[in-house]
Length: 351
Image (cartoon, rainbow, N blue to C red; front, side, top):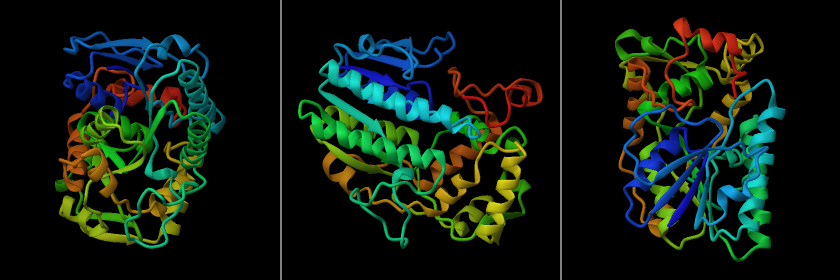
């Protein structure tokens, strides 16, 4: 099988490359990303890299001859410039779909998200039939929901391509910890200080429920989607739902419930001041997303999560402390002395 992975240099992408490298049914992988990874001996024998901007470049040469295309490409920033993320995430995805159709690719696997789902009405896990109109007005949720409609249209107009959508919960990996701190916490977040022995109390928004999944488990779900004949949407998450008390227990800290409105107001003020990159609507989404059932992925893909929800989160905090990263531009842990690169590029402005 010849596979093209669009957006291969990020958290899920790098994990997927490792999974495909180890799969004997995969003979070649073309890894596409806006920025090529740094030169290093990564040990890959099947993977070749190609610099590709899905919003501008001719994508036909990239996907022509592929048996399958996996689309992971996504921009989270700039959060103050949603027209930029829309151009990449929505328009770029539309261009990927058009190229897949023109080049008669037989399998298309898209990375959607729990954020595409409409808000929950209760904490019971939902299956893949739950509406996908976005968890909040955040650009991320709005764009994920819109792309679901693009994939609906693509699926309706072609029966020659098998379409799979994976909707992961919050995805963690040690090597993505610094990237996620940059994307959501910003340069002022003291990553190395967010450790159990240094946090006697843990303030958290009231009503927070969290589902996580390890990037390696997500990668195995994508691999399963490629090598089986299943189609449709699949939730991808660890089995457990984490409550605020579970998070406080992780830090051995005393839980301080914070009214959601107060937490949102503080985040909104910090975002408007360009002190943090995460917009307040992202907090709205985090508090509204439904809990997911992974039964369908288990049954149809033969997929089982290997890392628990709490262990995936623990690995994230280990990565924060140790400066976890990977030799690709998105996962590079080095932001310059005193994180100067994040300040000079503008908090939340770096695509």
